[in-house]
Length: 79
Image (cartoon, rainbow, N blue to C red; front, side):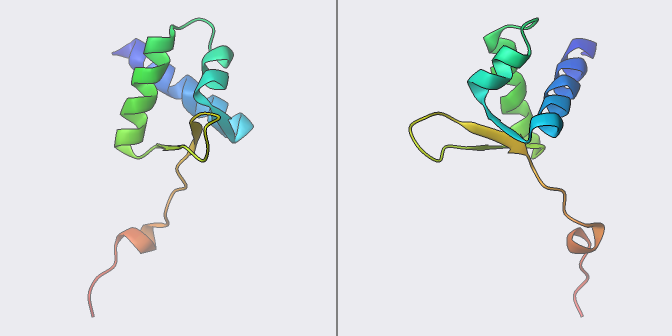
């Protein structure tokens, strides 16, 4: 579990630093883990809503951090 949290943190730090990148670029920036570990962690982070994965063209998937919404936008009460 600690390794999972550490890899999630490393991915978050890389995306904070560079903004967007392909899955392949992210894998190159994390040479100490396997492709499968990066892929499964990115999959988990996209399901949690932390990371956005887009496929704008045939060049590959583009990763970025999901923009955070303000607390006001999340907690709207009906009038």
